[in-house]
Image (cartoon, rainbow, N blue to C red; front, side, top):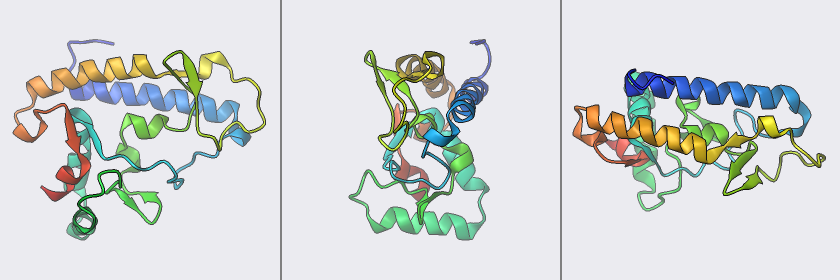
Length: 173
């Protein structure tokens, strides 16, 4: 990946790469994967890195006022529930196309700490998963971390000058 590109462009390239990996997994194991748009069993995200927070902030700004008000109301409803995703409404992610990388990969086969993990609802009848289709989470997080550091350095907005951004802060501001 070209490090001279802006962090936002590099982030979007990383998302495309992850989405291509997920598509390959879905093509190879269509009957073995329960994860789909609308499945919300793992939607408990409370914060994101700055670059992903900015992407979500841009998405929120693009919504009609009614949509923003609805998310704002949900964010204020349970202020102590840091794990409830404010972008989730009736089991559907309102920011699905802009969802963070952790949301894109959650449930799919990942390699983390030399172990393969995935949602317990997936791969119920398989004994082995193609090694080429397993996402290396450490590598992905390293790439995301590098992009995020550059984004923080370049961001003129002080709200995005920190490593982690609570989702509530994105919706409430």
